[in-house]
View 1: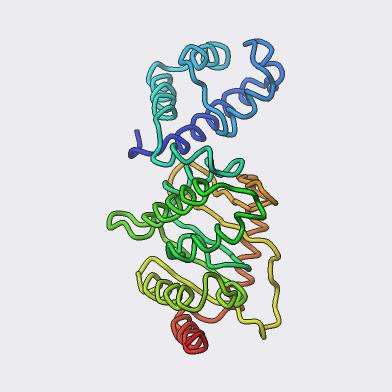
View 2 (view 1 turned 90 degrees about the vertical axis):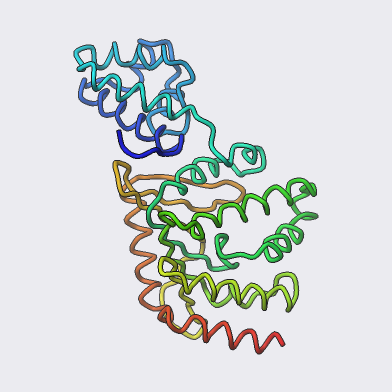
Length: 289
């Protein structure tokens, strides 16, 4: 078995293997679902890793149907993936406060090796200070009709997520591009913004963190909505997460992933070099004085 991974990572691995077995047998989702008494939707979500199989007997029935001649060692591998896919993850207590499908993304990002992100409107989440994040949620609170508990839990989750890039062992490699609007937009007042600029500069000094700014006066392609790409070192294909109104989309569809890689590369090539980020933010700091 590979190194210990989170439940979401293992769930998607298991789904990938089950889909592979089904396709090798030449059976459709509908055929397998009917044979096992599952709904088509349930099996589809299991195969893409959105839902788990809560009972080991369900997995064993799938194996008996799709891989009756599977070697015992391979069966044990699937059973081990299943066991690990049911474990609780650190963010589980926050699940009720997350948009749809955000739990899937949160579960995957902790096992990613590289994250590439574009943010046109606000400072990227993993770079935010607690005061900045709190101000963002407070601004939206009366409009979205959220409660104080919702604000507090989301800010706490966002701060805990920063551990992905601040941990000393195997930190995530983060590459962020932000539009100039994202760092100019006033959130929480001048003091909050000055502290936020310092935080970005300090984080960008880490060897595994790269931050670039795309200035207003550069004539180039700019994606209208934010997105994040996750790469993995092992068996999972890259995924892309995009925000869509109040929900989150997460997919590993190759065409969609490649489209967003092209978008990221185009903006990266037009943005200021990483070495100029600190100077750009220092200038904004003087403007906020």
